[in-house]
Image (cartoon, rainbow, N blue to C red; front, side, top):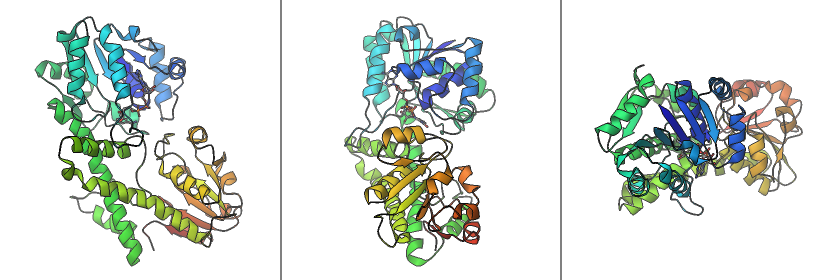
Amino acid sequence: MRLSVIGTGYLGATHAVCMAHLGYEVTGIDVDRGKIDRLADGVVPFFEPGLEDLLRATLATGRLRFSTSYDDAADADMHFLCVGTPQRKGEYAADLSYLDAAIESLSPRLARPCVVVGKSTVPIGTAERIADYVAAHAPAGPDIEVVWNPEFLREGFAIEDTLRPDRLVFGVKDESGADAMRRVYAPLLDTGVPAVVTDMATAQLVKVAANAFLATKISFINAMAEVCEATHADVKKLSEALAHDNRIGGRFLHAGLGFGGGCLPKDIRAFMARAGELGVDQALSFLTEVDAINQRRRARMVDLARECVEDSFRGRRVGVLGAAFKPNSDDIRDSPALDVATRISRAGAAVTVYDPAALNNARRDYPELTYATSVEAAVADADVVLHLTEWQEFRELDPAQLGELVRQRHIVDGRNALDAERWRAGGWHYRALGRP
Ligand code: NAD
């Protein structure tokens, strides 16, 4: 079976590589020539553990190719749509222009029966609209199946999540769509990966509902952190105790600086916007609060840092550990770390940021900040150090050694991930969100 993967960003590049690894002939298509050239050369244009090795191995088999020309996708049996669906500027709704452009480029080239599989995260109703467009504009229109197969991979675990997902979801119009998906995913289904077959609307909803639930769980524990701050209770102990309850569970129950990245924030906002259009905005009104709690954590982090420098950032030096929105990623989209760093820089501090993987992206999008290529350089002469992305490297730091480099031993742990006792034993004044 020949496959095309349209859009080779975090999702599409991973999907293309993994499908070629499973034995398919795959052509990755993107409008970004630089990205395509790098992928064709065996270079992953973003940070994802293990992906470059697998890319090189699959390129060597000859089964994986990359191109900027949709003509090279034309003869595939199945086309996976993986382009971005970011938040529209100044609005909550999703920007579907990339998806529309992709389907407009692809449709006229679909001259024989095939399956178009949507993987991008979209507002409910988009899949049906795309199916209508393909039926009307592709030469083989009536013989083309459109299926929605939402993607749940996590950056940092992208290969694992693609080859061993918790579940596959197939949103189909009829049984032949489900059969096509069972065929292409047979190597995964044969290992016991569960598949849930739904109608089109439910498949689109599963993805945004999952992200709404995860965002809510994070904001729930961060709301508890706010209460802890007012009562001198300890949110870390609270979440530990809650997590023992099997009905609650410990995952995504970690209080800290909150969520960011290219998915959760924009997905809950697009979900709210779509609910408004559907006349069910009240059903999702809680997500406004989920978003607000998340934003308040960033403000609280700035306040804690300010308290460490006697209430004024002017003339102060702040060392920031972390720029990526989460560890094991170089993704800085809606990064809480860079948001906090920028607010503090604008308040008058000299802010120096270090991140193991995201420095190039951060330099490109946040040129007003200063960057360092090591922890030591970032914290040199700092009045306060902020731990904003929980990379393993930061957990392993030696507080006593680092203390020799700073002006004042103040650390604010925005991720509740450092060992407070070790830092205190190293002479640091350790503070954290939601903890006394
Ligand atoms: P991304 O920005 O990394 O990649 C999108 C790619 O699409 C870019 O390389 C861009 O050049 C390309 N593109 C844009 N217009 C195109 C066109 N007309 N033709 C071909 N290529 C085009 O985004 P991403 O993180 O990979 O996300 C893609 C989709 O997957 C989004 O809907 C996102 O919500 C969803 N998703 C992402 C993740 C994740 O962890 N990143 C997880 C699950 C779902």
